[in-house]
Image (cartoon, rainbow, N blue to C red; front, top):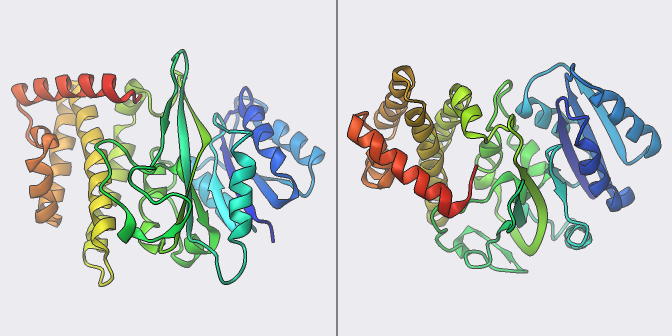
Length: 341
C-alpha cells in the first residue's frame, strides 16, 4: 500500500499541469500520483499525462474518462487510489518542496494500525498572480499544533478563515466508509470536500507548515468574479447541499458543539458568497434565485435561517435596492481586506 495518493483533476491543463506534477514527484515511491484526464479535448493534456506515466511507472497512474467536471475527477481519483491517505491537488497549483518531506514524515509516523489519524491539516498560500505579498492561511491560533486532537480542542475560527481543500489530507478509508462522492458537472465542490467528511474526522493533526500553493489569476478560473456569476447555478447547487448536510449533522446524536459551530460558520460564508454574486450580477432572475435559496433555508432549518439573518449576511436575504447597495459596498471592502478572488 502506498502512503499517500494524490489526485490531480486535469481538464485542458497542458500549459501548466507539468509544474504541478513535478512538484509532487519528490515524494518518490511512497506517493501515488493519479492524473485524472477529465475528457480534455482542446489540447494535449492526455498525452502529457501519458508521458509522465511512462517515465515514472509505479508512481504515476493516468485515469482517462469522459468529461464530468471537477467533482467527477476527484471521485475517479478516490476510486483508483490505493494509498493510506488521500489528497487532491488541482492542476494549476503545486506543493512546496521544503514542506513536502515534513508532510510525508508526519504521515509516515501515523501509518501504523493503532495510530492512524483521520485528517492531516497544513497551511496554504494564496499565490495570486501579480501580488507582491502572498497571503498564507494558517490555523495556529485556532487549532493545537503538532499533536493529535479532536474537534473539542478547536477554538472559534475568525471571520472568513476556513479549512479549505488545499489544507486537507484525509485518511482514505474515512472517505470510503461514508461512500463520499461529489456531484458531477459542478464547480465549487471543493466546499463539499472540506465539509461533508468533517463529522467523520475524530483524530486530527495540524502540521504548521506552508505546504500548498493555491494559484489565483487566470481569467477563466472558477473563483474569478465574472466566472462565478456565470456559473451561479453551480454555486447554488453546492450551497443547497451544504444546507442539507448541516441540517443532517444538527440532528446527529453525536454532534460536537465545536464542529457544529465551525460548520455553521462555513455554511454562512458560502451562503454569503452565493448571495453577493447574485446581487453583483444586477440580474433580476438571479435576485429571485438568491431569494429562493434563503426561503429554502427558512423552510428547512428555521434556527439556521434566523441566525444567518441576524448577522451581516442578513442584509442580503431580501432583495431591495438599498440592501443590494449596502451588500456591494460590504463585499468590495471585504475583498480588499481579505484578498480573495
